[in-house]
Image (cartoon, rainbow, N blue to C red; front, side):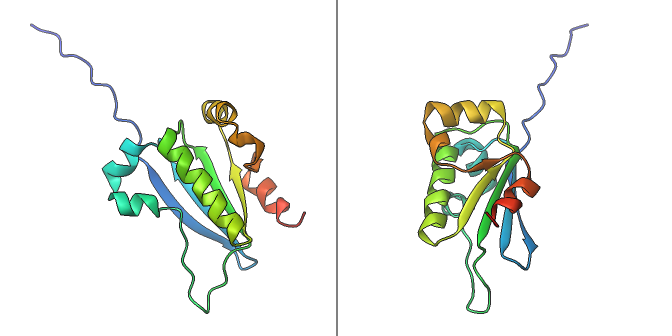
Length: 136
């Protein structure tokens, strides 16, 4: 009788969910799974992956004043994921929108420190803490 090799579980696939927190102009993007090129391209086309964090407003919609990226459930980020975050930050800043990262884990924070983006990317521990920053 031969032993069957154990299969390692598949990593949690990348997912993104947009929540409109309130009428006061806060949009929350809840990301989960690895924020990597491989994970992104497995679940969507390259064009969709590049615009995953974009928001489009119609004339009757107000652009949110605060944009929260909740990455609590993101175990790691590669260079593409880092580029998406920095690009989104620059996009928000150019439109006068405040962006805050929430739930940055130790592994992701180490990448931010190595690349020195921790010097300009605003971070908070919780969504509630980030929401309070809107008024400061």
